Image (cartoon, rainbow, N blue to C red; front, top):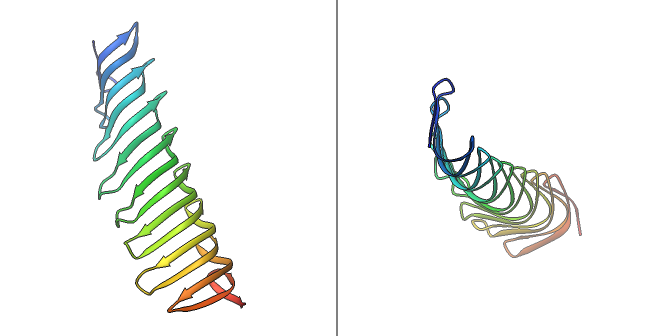
Length: 186
């Protein structure tokens, strides 16, 4: 069945049930450039499908017209996310590859790194620990490979903050840090 709506500038070709898109179908919106191919229920994307937005695309699970469940999203410049989605947001467990080839593997909440995760930055820096709103927050371990340095301890807003232990050129410093600066050596 084909629905061609000239005033709204879209076309739907696929299965219908009464007046609703249901089953497999293809939708193209000429105004926005969005193309969806996949499963439908009650005229909403529901099931497995591929949605293309100009140069970006998502393939995976949809529920009630939104990205929900497992799927992968690809942006330009080799940026991608593979993992869980909730209401069009990265939410749950997932892997994100940044445009500088840094990789985050861990928990997400509302499109932000949130919970436990591992962040690898250009094979030079590795952080394993807790995040809140895209920032290192809570207990974590960071290793700087190029200058043979490591820190085990607490973080707040991406800075060392609280008790910890710094390893640097075979020297160990115990102490308390505030906003990235040591304020009390033990």
